[in-house]
Amino acid sequence: MLTATIAGAVAVLAFAPFGYWPLQILSLGVLFYQVLRSSSVKGGALIGWAYGFGWCAAGTHWLYISMHRYGDMAAPIAAIAVALLALLMAIYVALSMGAAAWLRQRWVLSLPAMTLLVLPATWTLFEWTRGWLFTGFPWLATGYAHNASPLAGFAPIVGAYGLGWLAALSAGALLLLTHRTRWFALGGIIALYAAGIGLQYVAWTHPVGRPITVRLLQGNVPQQQKFDPGFVLGALQMYQGAITSAPADLIATPETAVTVLPHQLPPGYLDSLATYARQTGSSILVGMPVLDEQQRFYNAAVGITPNGTPGPYSYYQYRKHHLVPFGEFVPPGLHWFVAMMAIPLGDMGRGAEVQAPLAVRDQLVLPNICYEDLFGEEIAGQLASAHRSGKQSASVLLNISNLAWFGDSIAIPQHLQISQMRSLETGRPMLRSTNTGATAVIDGKGVVQSLLPPEQQATLAAKVQGMGGMTPYILYGNKLVLALAALALLTAFLLSRAARRGRAAQQ
Image 1: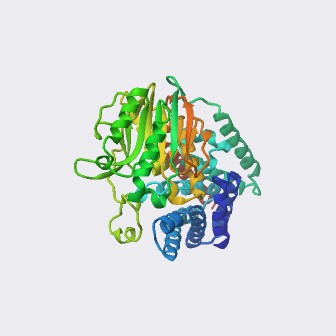
Image 2: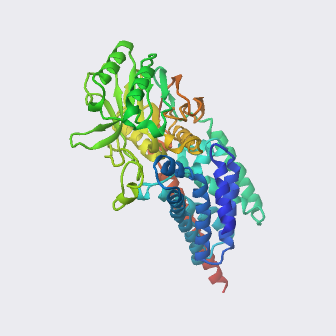
Image 3: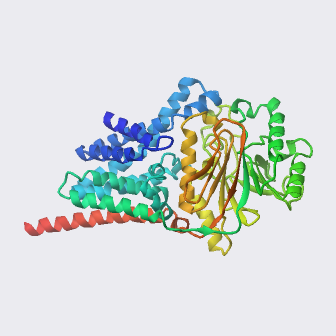
């Protein structure tokens, strides 16, 4: 279990900002080897639990910063909370490895069947489950480590979970290099990575319309002061000045750049932005909370277009759909935990699952807010929904975030890497406007074209070409990789039954 814990922690080095993706393959190989050595289902599950704990604790230790430094939670309680989260998330790995060990005993499987079929399949199925059960926590999903590896070419087909399955398959094949099937395993690895490289040259999407100019604002507002009533007016003036300093086809602010409701703004604030939009032809997207008719709060992106009309509810709105547990909604029975943290706007309403994009000249821009870009199938689902209804799908993705909650930690480059995966899956550029970083322009191949230094007040100006067309992942989401995992388990079962029949015939 100690070896598995260390292997899990080392796997974090495969992700941004480190990027040593081969370490992840080796790390999974160590996990699979330890599980195969175990003589019981319980042993396999405990080894998986230890691995998952090391992985989650090392990869999400930055949650301590948000709870202690910015959430005012006592340091010991914050540290315990991070450890408990790691223990809970590790249960998914425990279940995946326990299930593999159980299938091995029940089906009496050979080593190749375990390493190439069962272990990669159970790993993927439970990683996918982690991404949606109890609203999901897919941070550090295996596939994100491969946004720049040869496996990246498969992303438009099978998505991040599919890359995770291929990484697990690679790890299983490594274990066969000392087996009699070594040449088959080696050839499979070479063919897999060669295919991944080749797929990177496939143009799944194509340019649509004319490029648009964008200005992405990075306010660098200190999290300690962001919601301070004495600081709000200064922040509003700063963003107003930054927005109106130069025109662009699209000007975007970070998440909750405006921290008060529309009716609490200084008189004429939004009207002045609307006037600027009409005079310059700029479309402005402002992160701010809004209220609906039932007085329910939403974390929103409010769009002010050149042809817009005054009034806070007449503008374009995108309302965040996938909310952060404890930060944006309180799970039933856990209000006592949230009460220990000073998190403003901590219980919000959910926006619709499918929402219209914002029209910006020749392009359609689909916003997502902070944590939402962890859920690739939801973003792909919005694009597919428009396509199936005969409408034009969004051609540009836009993420607005406030990651100041996590300081200058590895959470910042990790989130950038997640956005890069969304571009790979959809073949569309992703724009990022953040409070402290990483504010960036990512092209449709998942490559960062422009990036602002973190923790500086600055504006990123760029020209962006929108992309149209459907990737297989947009059309089918995670169904393809789930089908592959199910097929692998079915194949393992059929091989097991054939082997039993063969033994029975010999007797």
